[in-house]
Length: 257
Ligand SMILES: Nc1ncnc2c1ncn2[C@@H]1O[C@H](COP(=O)(O)OP(=O)(O)OP(=O)(O)O)[C@@H](O)[C@H]1O
Ligand SMILES: [Mg+2]
Image 1 (tube, rainbow, N blue to C red):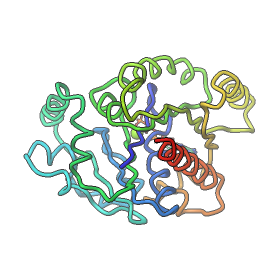
Image 2: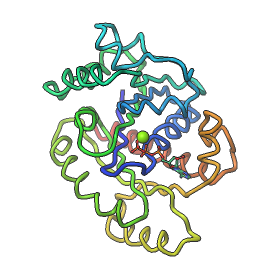
Image 3: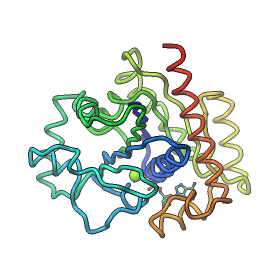
C-alpha cells in the first residue's frame, strides 16, 4: 500500500477534483485504487459515481464501532471509495475527538483494511490545518500540494510547508512533497505570469500542471471524472500525466529500497 495525500492550505483550489481524477487515472493505468474522503464536506463521492443518498462513511462506521471495510463502496471504473459519511455536528466533533489524540490512527486503520498488495490510496482533505490534515500527512508516503496560479494561493504555500515539515519530514517511509498547479489558463496573462514565477521558484518540485478545462467541471455534473467524460480533453491528458509521475515516483522508491 502507498498513500498519496492531496492537500492545500487554501480552500477551493481543486483538491477533491484532483483526488478523484487521479484515482481514475491510476485505475485506468491498471492499479488497485482506494479513494478516502477525509473532508466533512463528503464531496469525493460526487466525482466517483456513488449513490448520492448513501450516508455511510469512515466517520459513521468509526463512531458505531464498526470496521471501515463496511463503509467501502465501489465507484466508477472499479475505484474503491471510502466516503467521509454524513454526520451531524455532534458526531463530527466526536469523530474528530477520536482522531485528535492519536495522530497515526488513519495509517493504522488503512493498514488494517487488508488491501491488495500495491494498492494506491489517495486521500482527499479539507483545506488548512485540521485534525484530518494531520492524519493525512502522518499517513502519507507522497504529498501533493495543490495550488492555483494566483497570488492568494501562492501566499499560503509557506503554511503548507510548515505542516509538511512538522508531520512528514524525517518520518520513515515518507518520500516527498510536490506541487501541482491547477487551473492554469494560458489565455490569461496573470495566470501565465504566476505559473512562470512558481515554476522558477519551485523548480522540479512542480510535478504537474492541470489546465483550466470546462470539461473537468462538466464531468463532475455527470458524476464522472474528465477521463471518462472526454478522452481528448486537456484535463484528461493532464491527469494522466500526473498519474504517471506518481507511479514513476513510487516505482523509483521501490527500486532504491
Ligand atoms: N482544472 C480545472 N478546470 C476547471 N474547473 C476546475 C478545475 N479544477 C477544479 N475545478 C473546479 O473548481 C471548483 C473547486 O474544486 P474542488 O471542489 O475540487 O476544490 P477543493 O480544493 O476540493 O475545495 P475545498 O477546499 O472546499 O475542499 C469546482 O467547481 C471544480 O469543478
Ligand atoms: Mg474538496
